[in-house]
Image (tube, rainbow, N blue to C red; front, top):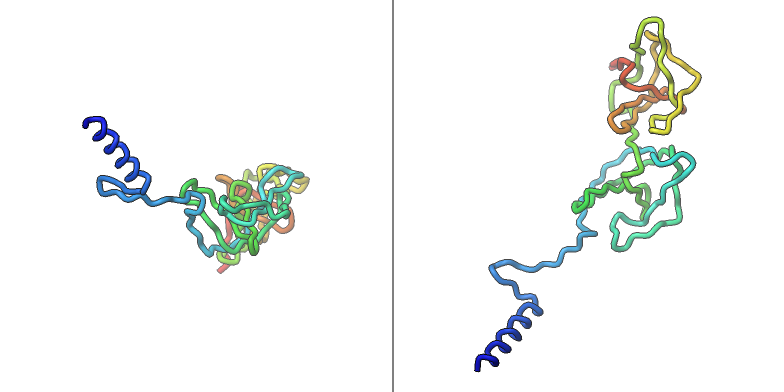
Length: 189
């Protein structure tokens, strides 16, 4: 009789577990980690910050369960407008939507902001009297100093800003950038 009872108990337990019955008042709900996201309608502009001479892939979706490369690639230094963001709440990865079914991963971008939303339209170089600061070809980590230098005390128009890591950079037009550490922003209300 003991053997029959043991077999019956084992079979009952297996059947209950196989049927998805849970004990201790908990429920068993399947979770799809790949689709747990937080999407927003943020818009803006970003710079592709990868390896000079190389490009990043554009993906069809931020959802890894049905994701594939679209065949489109964006070169390092390219400016791109985005129309939405999607943050995976399981791993924190943020994706930027740059078109219908076109997404890029935040690991390869640097924010690029327009100054239209601020009162800043010019800046003044505040360095050491008699000396100048470098103008750079890009705010990205692969930047190179240009031959152009800006004298201490000189004032320049600025058109946009980019945050790269901990550094804020201001664009003087084209591929001409200066670091916020050597300037004073002018309020032109």
